Image (cartoon, rainbow over all chains, first blue to last red; front, side, top):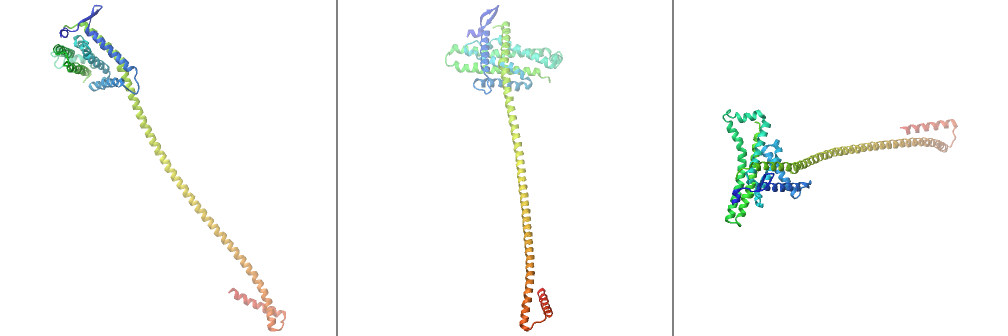
Length: 222
Length: 163
Protein backbone atom coordinates (compact mmCIF):
# COMPACT_ATOMS: atom_id res chain seq x y z
CA UNK A 1 0.00 0.00 0.00
CA UNK A 2 2.57 2.56 1.06
CA UNK A 3 4.87 1.15 -1.57
CA UNK A 4 2.31 1.86 -4.30
CA UNK A 5 2.10 5.50 -3.30
CA UNK A 6 5.83 5.93 -2.80
CA UNK A 7 6.65 4.70 -6.26
CA UNK A 8 9.66 2.74 -7.37
CA UNK A 9 12.53 2.68 -4.92
CA UNK A 10 16.17 2.96 -5.86
CA UNK A 11 17.83 -0.44 -5.97
CA UNK A 12 21.41 0.64 -6.55
CA UNK A 13 23.44 3.30 -8.29
CA UNK A 14 25.83 3.16 -11.24
CA UNK A 15 28.14 6.17 -11.68
CA UNK A 16 25.76 8.18 -9.56
CA UNK A 17 22.76 7.25 -11.70
CA UNK A 18 20.06 5.78 -9.49
CA UNK A 19 18.80 2.44 -10.83
CA UNK A 20 15.22 2.17 -9.64
CA UNK A 21 12.97 -0.86 -9.50
CA UNK A 22 11.44 0.44 -12.71
CA UNK A 23 14.72 0.05 -14.55
CA UNK A 24 15.37 -3.39 -13.10
CA UNK A 25 11.89 -4.57 -14.06
CA UNK A 26 12.39 -3.14 -17.54
CA UNK A 27 15.64 -5.05 -17.91
CA UNK A 28 14.01 -8.27 -16.77
CA UNK A 29 11.13 -7.75 -19.21
CA UNK A 30 13.57 -6.94 -22.00
CA UNK A 31 15.65 -10.02 -21.31
CA UNK A 32 12.54 -12.21 -21.27
CA UNK A 33 11.31 -10.72 -24.57
CA UNK A 34 14.67 -10.97 -26.30
CA UNK A 35 15.41 -14.52 -25.15
CA UNK A 36 11.86 -15.56 -26.04
CA UNK A 37 12.12 -14.00 -29.50
CA UNK A 38 15.52 -15.56 -30.03
CA UNK A 39 14.41 -19.03 -28.97
CA UNK A 40 11.27 -18.91 -31.09
CA UNK A 41 12.81 -17.51 -34.27
CA UNK A 42 16.01 -19.54 -34.00
CA UNK A 43 14.46 -22.69 -35.44
CA UNK A 44 11.97 -21.38 -37.94
CA UNK A 45 10.77 -24.02 -40.38
CA UNK A 46 8.77 -23.87 -43.55
CA UNK A 47 5.96 -25.81 -41.98
CA UNK A 48 5.11 -23.98 -38.76
CA UNK A 49 4.50 -25.89 -35.56
CA UNK A 50 4.16 -25.08 -31.88
CA UNK A 51 5.45 -21.69 -30.77
CA UNK A 52 6.36 -20.76 -34.33
CA UNK A 53 2.62 -20.42 -34.98
CA UNK A 54 2.35 -17.96 -32.10
CA UNK A 55 5.30 -15.90 -33.31
CA UNK A 56 3.98 -15.90 -36.90
CA UNK A 57 0.49 -14.93 -35.76
CA UNK A 58 1.91 -12.18 -33.55
CA UNK A 59 4.13 -10.64 -36.22
CA UNK A 60 1.52 -11.02 -38.93
CA UNK A 61 -1.14 -9.58 -36.61
CA UNK A 62 1.03 -6.56 -35.83
CA UNK A 63 1.86 -6.08 -39.53
CA UNK A 64 -1.81 -6.29 -40.50
CA UNK A 65 -2.81 -4.02 -37.62
CA UNK A 66 -0.28 -1.41 -38.73
CA UNK A 67 -1.34 -1.63 -42.38
CA UNK A 68 -4.99 -1.37 -41.35
CA UNK A 69 -4.43 1.69 -39.18
CA UNK A 70 -1.75 3.50 -41.19
CA UNK A 71 -2.02 2.16 -44.73
CA UNK A 72 0.27 -0.08 -46.77
CA UNK A 73 2.97 2.58 -47.24
CA UNK A 74 3.58 2.76 -43.49
CA UNK A 75 4.30 -0.90 -43.03
CA UNK A 76 7.78 0.03 -41.82
CA UNK A 77 6.20 1.28 -38.62
CA UNK A 78 5.13 -2.25 -37.68
CA UNK A 79 8.37 -3.19 -35.97
CA UNK A 80 8.28 -0.13 -33.69
CA UNK A 81 4.57 -0.59 -33.01
CA UNK A 82 5.15 -4.27 -32.32
CA UNK A 83 8.03 -3.53 -29.96
CA UNK A 84 5.85 -1.05 -28.09
CA UNK A 85 2.92 -3.46 -27.94
CA UNK A 86 4.94 -6.39 -26.63
CA UNK A 87 6.98 -4.28 -24.22
CA UNK A 88 4.07 -2.30 -22.78
CA UNK A 89 1.88 -5.38 -22.44
CA UNK A 90 4.54 -7.40 -20.65
CA UNK A 91 5.50 -4.37 -18.55
CA UNK A 92 1.85 -3.90 -17.59
CA UNK A 93 1.39 -7.51 -16.50
CA UNK A 94 4.81 -7.83 -14.87
CA UNK A 95 3.09 -6.96 -11.58
CA UNK A 96 1.61 -10.45 -11.72
CA UNK A 97 5.13 -11.87 -11.38
CA UNK A 98 5.95 -9.74 -8.37
CA UNK A 99 7.82 -7.04 -10.30
CA UNK A 100 7.20 -3.34 -10.05
CA UNK A 101 5.41 -2.59 -13.39
CA UNK A 102 7.71 -0.22 -15.33
CA UNK A 103 4.63 1.46 -16.80
CA UNK A 104 3.49 2.44 -13.31
CA UNK A 105 6.37 4.91 -13.33
CA UNK A 106 6.21 8.26 -15.09
CA UNK A 107 9.82 7.75 -16.06
CA UNK A 108 8.84 4.96 -18.44
CA UNK A 109 5.59 6.38 -19.79
CA UNK A 110 6.97 9.87 -20.34
CA UNK A 111 9.96 8.32 -22.05
CA UNK A 112 7.63 6.45 -24.40
CA UNK A 113 5.53 9.58 -24.90
CA UNK A 114 8.62 11.61 -25.80
CA UNK A 115 9.61 8.99 -28.37
CA UNK A 116 6.16 9.13 -29.93
CA UNK A 117 6.37 12.94 -29.90
CA UNK A 118 9.66 12.93 -31.77
CA UNK A 119 8.46 10.37 -34.29
CA UNK A 120 5.38 12.51 -34.97
CA UNK A 121 7.39 15.73 -35.40
CA UNK A 122 10.08 14.03 -37.48
CA UNK A 123 7.60 12.36 -39.79
CA UNK A 124 5.61 15.60 -40.07
CA UNK A 125 8.65 17.58 -41.16
CA UNK A 126 9.94 14.80 -43.40
CA UNK A 127 6.67 14.28 -45.28
CA UNK A 128 5.24 17.81 -45.35
CA UNK A 129 8.48 19.70 -45.67
CA UNK A 130 9.58 22.25 -43.10
CA UNK A 131 7.55 25.03 -44.73
CA UNK A 132 4.20 23.31 -44.64
CA UNK A 133 4.98 21.89 -41.20
CA UNK A 134 5.63 25.34 -39.74
CA UNK A 135 2.68 26.81 -41.62
CA UNK A 136 0.38 24.18 -40.14
CA UNK A 137 1.51 25.01 -36.64
CA UNK A 138 1.91 28.79 -36.87
CA UNK A 139 -0.65 29.94 -39.45
CA UNK A 140 -3.60 27.54 -39.20
CA UNK A 141 -6.48 28.12 -38.93
CA UNK A 142 -5.81 31.80 -38.00
CA UNK A 143 -2.24 33.13 -38.41
CA UNK A 144 -0.21 33.57 -35.19
CA UNK A 145 -3.29 33.75 -32.97
CA UNK A 146 -3.71 29.98 -32.90
CA UNK A 147 0.01 29.17 -32.84
CA UNK A 148 0.24 28.77 -29.05
CA UNK A 149 -2.77 26.46 -29.07
CA UNK A 150 -1.28 24.38 -31.86
CA UNK A 151 1.97 24.08 -29.96
CA UNK A 152 0.16 23.13 -26.77
CA UNK A 153 -1.88 20.57 -28.69
CA UNK A 154 1.32 19.03 -30.08
CA UNK A 155 2.85 18.91 -26.60
CA UNK A 156 -0.35 17.57 -25.10
CA UNK A 157 -0.22 14.47 -27.25
CA UNK A 158 2.76 12.78 -25.57
CA UNK A 159 1.68 14.00 -22.14
CA UNK A 160 -1.81 12.55 -22.50
CA UNK A 161 -0.35 9.31 -23.86
CA UNK A 162 2.14 9.07 -21.00
CA UNK A 163 -0.27 9.86 -18.21
CA UNK A 164 -3.10 7.73 -19.53
CA UNK A 165 -0.85 4.68 -19.44
CA UNK A 166 0.81 5.65 -16.16
CA UNK A 167 -2.49 6.47 -14.47
CA UNK A 168 -4.21 3.28 -15.50
CA UNK A 169 -1.39 0.98 -14.45
CA UNK A 170 -0.56 2.83 -11.23
CA UNK A 171 -4.27 2.88 -10.36
CA UNK A 172 -4.31 -0.87 -10.85
CA UNK A 173 -1.33 -1.27 -8.55
CA UNK A 174 -2.88 1.04 -5.93
CA UNK A 175 -6.30 -0.62 -6.08
CA UNK A 176 -4.71 -4.08 -5.85
CA UNK A 177 -2.66 -2.87 -2.88
CA UNK A 178 -5.81 -1.66 -1.16
CA UNK A 179 -7.60 -4.94 -1.89
CA UNK A 180 -4.69 -6.95 -0.53
CA UNK A 181 -4.69 -4.95 2.67
CA UNK A 182 -8.41 -5.71 3.17
CA UNK A 183 -8.97 -9.24 1.73
CA UNK A 184 -5.67 -10.91 0.98
CA UNK A 185 -7.08 -14.21 -0.36
CA UNK A 186 -9.43 -15.37 -3.22
CA UNK A 187 -10.91 -11.93 -3.95
CA UNK A 188 -7.72 -10.54 -5.57
CA UNK A 189 -7.64 -13.31 -8.20
CA UNK A 190 -10.44 -12.09 -10.52
CA UNK A 191 -9.33 -8.50 -9.86
CA UNK A 192 -5.86 -9.40 -11.00
CA UNK A 193 -7.36 -10.68 -14.23
CA UNK A 194 -9.13 -7.37 -14.71
CA UNK A 195 -6.53 -4.87 -13.52
CA UNK A 196 -3.43 -6.62 -14.78
CA UNK A 197 -4.38 -8.77 -17.77
CA UNK A 198 -7.35 -6.90 -19.19
CA UNK A 199 -6.34 -3.33 -18.39
CA UNK A 200 -2.73 -4.20 -19.24
CA UNK A 201 -3.64 -5.49 -22.71
CA UNK A 202 -6.14 -2.70 -23.30
CA UNK A 203 -3.75 0.08 -22.29
CA UNK A 204 -0.93 -1.31 -24.41
CA UNK A 205 -3.29 -1.42 -27.38
CA UNK A 206 -4.53 2.10 -26.73
CA UNK A 207 -1.01 3.47 -26.48
CA UNK A 208 0.13 1.77 -29.70
CA UNK A 209 -3.08 2.57 -31.56
CA UNK A 210 -2.95 6.26 -30.65
CA UNK A 211 0.74 6.44 -31.55
CA UNK A 212 -0.08 4.96 -34.95
CA UNK A 213 -2.98 7.35 -35.52
CA UNK A 214 -0.92 10.41 -34.56
CA UNK A 215 2.02 9.34 -36.70
CA UNK A 216 -0.13 8.62 -39.74
CA UNK A 217 -1.89 11.96 -39.26
CA UNK A 218 1.51 13.64 -39.25
CA UNK A 219 2.51 11.76 -42.41
CA UNK A 220 -0.65 12.63 -44.33
CA UNK A 221 0.09 15.60 -46.55
CA UNK A 222 -3.55 16.18 -47.58
CA UNK B 1 6.31 10.79 -6.74
CA UNK B 2 8.45 13.14 -8.74
CA UNK B 3 9.36 12.86 -12.39
CA UNK B 4 12.96 11.71 -12.71
CA UNK B 5 14.69 12.82 -15.90
CA UNK B 6 17.39 10.15 -15.49
CA UNK B 7 14.81 7.39 -15.43
CA UNK B 8 13.17 8.87 -18.53
CA UNK B 9 16.47 8.89 -20.41
CA UNK B 10 17.32 5.36 -19.29
CA UNK B 11 13.88 4.12 -20.33
CA UNK B 12 14.17 5.76 -23.74
CA UNK B 13 17.54 4.05 -24.20
CA UNK B 14 16.09 0.73 -23.01
CA UNK B 15 13.15 1.02 -25.40
CA UNK B 16 15.45 1.88 -28.30
CA UNK B 17 17.68 -1.10 -27.52
CA UNK B 18 14.64 -3.37 -27.31
CA UNK B 19 13.34 -1.91 -30.58
CA UNK B 20 16.56 -2.48 -32.49
CA UNK B 21 17.07 -5.97 -31.07
CA UNK B 22 13.48 -7.06 -31.75
CA UNK B 23 13.56 -5.53 -35.20
CA UNK B 24 16.68 -7.53 -35.95
CA UNK B 25 15.77 -10.85 -34.40
CA UNK B 26 11.97 -10.88 -34.58
CA UNK B 27 10.13 -8.51 -36.89
CA UNK B 28 12.45 -8.36 -39.88
CA UNK B 29 13.23 -12.08 -40.15
CA UNK B 30 9.70 -13.23 -39.40
CA UNK B 31 8.15 -10.74 -41.82
CA UNK B 32 10.69 -11.72 -44.45
CA UNK B 33 10.04 -15.37 -43.73
CA UNK B 34 6.27 -14.92 -43.99
CA UNK B 35 6.60 -12.90 -47.20
CA UNK B 36 8.88 -15.51 -48.69
CA UNK B 37 6.51 -18.28 -47.81
CA UNK B 38 3.61 -16.28 -49.19
CA UNK B 39 5.53 -15.70 -52.41
CA UNK B 40 6.50 -19.35 -52.59
CA UNK B 41 2.89 -20.42 -52.15
CA UNK B 42 1.74 -17.85 -54.67
CA UNK B 43 4.29 -18.91 -57.25
CA UNK B 44 3.39 -22.55 -56.62
CA UNK B 45 -0.30 -21.79 -57.17
CA UNK B 46 0.57 -19.84 -60.31
CA UNK B 47 2.73 -22.68 -61.56
CA UNK B 48 0.02 -25.21 -60.82
CA UNK B 49 -2.49 -23.13 -62.72
CA UNK B 50 -0.07 -22.81 -65.61
CA UNK B 51 0.53 -26.54 -65.58
CA UNK B 52 -3.17 -27.23 -65.54
CA UNK B 53 -3.65 -24.87 -68.46
CA UNK B 54 -0.79 -26.51 -70.32
CA UNK B 55 -2.29 -29.92 -69.62
CA UNK B 56 -5.67 -28.76 -70.88
CA UNK B 57 -4.02 -27.37 -74.00
CA UNK B 58 -2.16 -30.61 -74.52
CA UNK B 59 -5.35 -32.57 -74.03
CA UNK B 60 -7.16 -30.41 -76.59
CA UNK B 61 -4.25 -30.84 -78.97
CA UNK B 62 -4.25 -34.61 -78.54
CA UNK B 63 -7.99 -34.74 -78.94
CA UNK B 64 -7.71 -32.75 -82.16
CA UNK B 65 -4.96 -35.07 -83.32
CA UNK B 66 -7.04 -38.09 -82.41
CA UNK B 67 -10.00 -36.74 -84.33
CA UNK B 68 -7.76 -36.07 -87.27
CA UNK B 69 -6.28 -39.55 -87.08
CA UNK B 70 -9.73 -41.04 -86.89
CA UNK B 71 -10.76 -39.03 -89.90
CA UNK B 72 -7.65 -40.08 -91.73
CA UNK B 73 -8.20 -43.72 -90.95
CA UNK B 74 -11.75 -43.33 -92.16
CA UNK B 75 -10.47 -41.83 -95.41
CA UNK B 76 -7.92 -44.57 -95.79
CA UNK B 77 -10.56 -47.17 -95.18
CA UNK B 78 -12.89 -45.54 -97.67
CA UNK B 79 -10.11 -45.33 -100.19
CA UNK B 80 -9.29 -48.95 -99.65
CA UNK B 81 -12.90 -49.93 -100.00
CA UNK B 82 -13.23 -47.88 -103.16
CA UNK B 83 -10.02 -49.33 -104.52
CA UNK B 84 -11.05 -52.87 -103.75
CA UNK B 85 -14.43 -52.15 -105.25
CA UNK B 86 -12.71 -50.89 -108.36
CA UNK B 87 -10.39 -53.88 -108.40
CA UNK B 88 -13.33 -56.16 -107.93
CA UNK B 89 -15.23 -54.66 -110.83
CA UNK B 90 -12.06 -54.75 -112.87
CA UNK B 91 -11.58 -58.39 -112.08
CA UNK B 92 -15.19 -59.09 -112.85
CA UNK B 93 -14.95 -57.19 -116.10
CA UNK B 94 -11.77 -59.03 -116.96
CA UNK B 95 -13.40 -62.32 -116.11
CA UNK B 96 -16.38 -61.42 -118.14
CA UNK B 97 -14.15 -60.50 -121.06
CA UNK B 98 -12.21 -63.71 -120.66
CA UNK B 99 -15.40 -65.68 -120.61
CA UNK B 100 -16.58 -63.81 -123.63
CA UNK B 101 -13.31 -64.53 -125.37
CA UNK B 102 -13.45 -68.20 -124.45
CA UNK B 103 -17.01 -68.41 -125.60
CA UNK B 104 -16.12 -66.67 -128.82
CA UNK B 105 -13.26 -69.02 -129.37
CA UNK B 106 -15.50 -71.99 -128.63
CA UNK B 107 -18.02 -70.64 -131.07
CA UNK B 108 -15.35 -70.31 -133.67
CA UNK B 109 -14.17 -73.81 -133.03
CA UNK B 110 -17.70 -75.04 -133.18
CA UNK B 111 -18.07 -73.19 -136.43
CA UNK B 112 -14.95 -74.81 -137.78
CA UNK B 113 -16.08 -78.20 -136.59
CA UNK B 114 -19.44 -77.61 -138.12
CA UNK B 115 -17.80 -76.59 -141.35
CA UNK B 116 -15.68 -79.69 -141.33
CA UNK B 117 -18.66 -81.78 -140.41
CA UNK B 118 -20.60 -80.27 -143.27
CA UNK B 119 -17.80 -80.96 -145.68
CA UNK B 120 -17.61 -84.49 -144.42
CA UNK B 121 -21.36 -84.84 -144.62
CA UNK B 122 -21.37 -83.45 -148.09
CA UNK B 123 -18.84 -86.08 -149.16
CA UNK B 124 -20.76 -88.77 -147.40
CA UNK B 125 -23.95 -87.50 -148.86
CA UNK B 126 -22.45 -87.50 -152.27
CA UNK B 127 -21.48 -91.13 -151.91
CA UNK B 128 -24.78 -91.97 -150.35
CA UNK B 129 -26.75 -90.22 -153.03
CA UNK B 130 -24.63 -91.80 -155.67
CA UNK B 131 -25.16 -95.24 -154.33
CA UNK B 132 -28.82 -94.51 -153.62
CA UNK B 133 -29.34 -93.12 -157.04
CA UNK B 134 -27.58 -96.04 -158.66
CA UNK B 135 -29.79 -98.35 -156.72
CA UNK B 136 -32.93 -96.45 -157.59
CA UNK B 137 -32.18 -95.86 -161.24
CA UNK B 138 -30.44 -99.26 -161.67
CA UNK B 139 -28.42 -97.67 -164.21
CA UNK B 140 -25.10 -95.92 -164.17
CA UNK B 141 -25.19 -92.45 -165.48
CA UNK B 142 -22.17 -91.10 -167.18
CA UNK B 143 -19.98 -89.39 -164.76
CA UNK B 144 -20.73 -85.88 -166.16
CA UNK B 145 -24.41 -85.99 -165.65
CA UNK B 146 -23.85 -87.68 -162.34
CA UNK B 147 -21.74 -84.76 -161.05
CA UNK B 148 -24.24 -82.29 -162.38
CA UNK B 149 -27.06 -83.92 -160.56
CA UNK B 150 -25.19 -84.09 -157.32
CA UNK B 151 -24.17 -80.46 -157.44
CA UNK B 152 -27.67 -79.33 -158.00
CA UNK B 153 -28.86 -81.43 -155.19
CA UNK B 154 -26.31 -80.03 -152.80
CA UNK B 155 -26.96 -76.41 -153.80
CA UNK B 156 -30.55 -76.98 -153.08
CA UNK B 157 -29.67 -78.33 -149.67
CA UNK B 158 -27.32 -75.39 -148.99
CA UNK B 159 -30.00 -72.94 -149.85
CA UNK B 160 -32.41 -74.62 -147.49
CA UNK B 161 -29.78 -74.80 -144.84
CA UNK B 162 -28.92 -71.10 -145.03
CA UNK B 163 -32.48 -69.96 -144.88
